[in-house]
Each structure stands twice: as C-alpha cells, then as structure tokens.
Image (cartoon, rainbow, N blue to C red; front, side):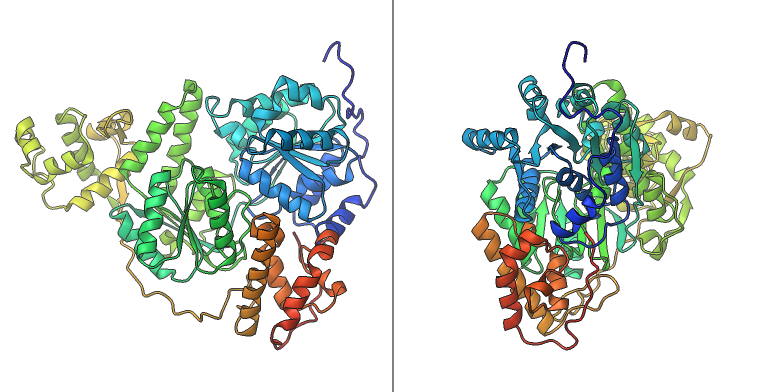
Length: 637
C-alpha cells in the first residue's frame, strides 16, 4: 500500500521458505506419519513457494496438515481463520499435544488469557494463532499483526466466504483485504466442499482471481446414499436406528428444540442418544462429545454445530431428519460417516414443509437479490438430487464437476423406481391450484382432488369447481408425493413468506396449456428389516481389514477408556489425544517398547514422550492376541 513500509514477511520473488526435506521431517517427527496423503504435498509446496492456494479435499483427508506443516517449517507466525470457537479450541489442543506452540484468541477466553496469547505470539513463541474473522479483521488487530513476521494466512472452512451471507458473517467477505495489507504473504483457503461456482467465488473474493487450485475427488463410495419422503419422521427415524442397533451415528435436525426433543425420544426407546447444539453449556457439549468419541453405540442428535473437526472413524450413519441447506452442506455432513472406509449409510428425509422453510430462510436473509438468487439455485440443486431419476451418486458428484459410472450403492441403483408419465395427473393438480386461486397448501388441494367435502372446501365453494373429485382414485400420500415432486422439478412454487400456499410457475403454466410432460418417481417405502445380530465383543476394522474380535476388541475399549481419562485430566476432547485410527493401529501392532510405540500412526515426538508409558502398560496388561506384532509402519495422516 502507498506510503506504508513493506510488511515484515513480504517475500519478493517467492524464494523457498524452508530447506529441502523440512516438510517431511515435520510430518514424521511432529505428527508421527510416514507419508503424505494424496494432494497434501503439492499444496504445501505451493504455500512454501509463496503462492496462494485453494484446497478442496474430502472430509477426513488431512486438510489441516496442508497449512500446519508450512507453519512449522516457516520462520514466523501463521494466522488461522476459523469459523467456530469450539473448532479452533480443539485444533489448538491437538497441536499442543503434538508439541506445537499454538494459541487461539476468542471470546470464550477471558481477557487475561487473550492478552497472554497475544504476548506469546508477539514474542515469537507461537507458530499458529487461531481466531475468528470478526476478531482478525479489526483495524487494531490488523495493525498489530503488521508489526509481526506473519508468514502465512490459512482460512479454514473457506466455503463460508461464499455461502455465509454478508448479514451473517460480513467479516468473511472482508478477508479479501488480507492480500493487500500483507503483500507477499501466501494465503491458504481450505474446505471439504465447494462446487465450481463456490470455488470461483472464493478465488475472486479472497485472491483477486489468482490462486492455484487443488481439488481432490469427492467420491466416498463406501457411503450408501438414500433419500425418503418425510411421512411420519419419528417412526421413520426409529425404524432406521433399529436397523443400525448398537452402531454409532449422527442425526441432524434443523433446530435446537428439535435436537433436544429427538434425543429424548430416542433415549425413551432405549437408544443411547445425546443432544448437541450451540445453545448448550460448553462443559455439557464437551461431555457429550467425549462420550460419543469413546463409548460404542452412541447416537448424537445435533444441529450443524456438531461435526467440524470431529475425527471419529467408525460413525456408521448420518441421518438427516430435515432437509440441509445445500448440496455442499449435505456433502460435508454425510462425510462424517465411514471414515474408516467400512460400509456406512447417509439417509435423508424431506418434504414440502422442508422446502418451504429453506426457501424462507433464503428470503429472510439480509442479502442482495443476486445472493438470494444463488442460494435458491443451490437449494434447487439439492432438490434435484433428492428427486434424481438415476444413480444418486452420479447426480451428487456431477454437482461438484466429477463424473462417475452408476455406483450400485444408493437407493436408486439398488431399488430403482419406475419413472411414470404423470402429465395428466400433474395437469389436474395445476388446475386445482389455478381454480382455487393459487393460495392454498397441499392438504387443501388434495382434498379438492380427492373430492373430500371438508368444512373449508364447502365454505370456499371448492366443491363446485370442475377439478373437484377428479383424483378420487389416488390416496393422499400418492398426491402428496406427486405435488412434492412437482415443486422440486419446478412446475409448482411454494409461498415461502406465508403458510406454504402453492402457486404455478411459468413452467407449470406451459404444462397446463399442453406444452411439455411431467414424469415422476413412485415413492418406495423402505421395509423394516430386523436389526443385525452383532457380537458385542466385536468392533469394525478399516476397509479391507478384518473386524476386531475377542481380546483385540477388549483392548480397544481399554485404550479408549485410557484416552478418555487422559483427556479429562488435560481438559481436552478425547479425539485430540489420539484419533480412533491411532488406537486401532496400537491394537494391531501391540507395541512393547517406546521404539515400537513410535511406529504407531499419529505418534510424534511429543506424544511419544507424554503417552508411551501409560498406553504401553495398558497394552502389556491385555491378553495376548494371535498374530499380533510385526506390522510395518506405513500409516498416513
């Protein structure tokens, strides 16, 4: 900027910021991993070379290491922008346990704690400093950072730049100023979910159109995808969980109130279900998170506040009791299932009221017409996925620009429903809506179509319109499904500002006049199947590996209990001590010495020093298992 001295970290020419091999040493010695995962090394090289980078990697693929490794090998401070206090606190706790000097400044800390964190950063004793965009993008903070050797900015959950409106988190858009205020300092933007429009938006806003993009494949083939029309959601949820008895899962609800009520309902049915939402006390949230991470068969009923940063390998299902806000949100939330590569399921319910509520949320947002148009388009894409006529995974990945063959692991592939020509029935619906004034909801239109003389129908004279009774041969659920699909495919629209009244779109008017066709999918009711019999002493292994049983399963539970005890002593969530995959590696390797313990995936120098003795003692005290030992170190982050 004119009139200002160059920023301390400005690096003209972008010379390498670290000696050769430094990144691999940090990976091995600090984080305890032998090899980089696909895509990580290229991102790290770009950032060390002083180049901006947008990184899109699936959930659980190790995005955080893409900026944490450069932060360790660069000589200066890395500032990490994180959207949620709980997320940044967990990441800081995990880094500290790995021996990395990290801090966070946020409103959950006391003033004294924030001042102490800043002093450590200013004195050069902190390598990664986490804060929310609202705190970073103040004139005072920016001026203070300008006096420090800031070497890297990392914007975590970067899709928020595009998808969170200016009325909600305006400072996310303000992050564009960083490249001007800190010239020569590379910026990393990282997310698990961003379609092409979102990626372009991030590159334009954050990088001024200039950044390297690293986009890994989006496919998670082990997750079975299913969508069901919402009829009796409590019964549908209960039936689904009964089929997954004894398994860990996440149930997402739209509101905090529904989260609490759903958890109580499941608990009354004998399910170990715990609520989780941002309105709970921090201690209670952390307690529920630790139980979920440590104990088998726990179901968390949550709002979107739950999930970011959670590293639990054996989540067997994600159930959406309400429609998510977009394909991106849906993809990110289902990505918390099946991280171990073993079979998992993502099941979603949706209905007309879901569509109305989501449309209303978009309209109620204090944003300009262009943003509202884009958010409606995002919702249209999700509805298109829900009504996919062919392979659901093909539709999902096509949204992100990835093309695959039909997957054979979604409800449409496994139990395809016939696409039926419903043009004439659709015209009956359109006629009923048109002749009744386009201001009534689906229930009233169905009463007209089926010839039901309710008080409302009689009072309004709708029993005298030509369409009255023309659909008496169909049941209510059939008409409800057909109307829902007409809304999803753009023939009908919902009055999102009112009470769900149904109107006719231009596309619908064309069909009513005889132009075009309408084909619909016959809804299939998922039959209840008996819960699978499970060996209570068995635990799933990673993809392609046998499940743990007997002594190995018992040892895993012992190690989880030890992990929880250590987590409570240190005041951190259980998964930041060791993720599940590290405990599984311990069970399979059964290390007997500190040197062997150092070979466990995720055991770096700091964790070796802090945790080797208690974990080795627990392993030594466990009954021997056939075929233990001898595994070669080869796990990756």
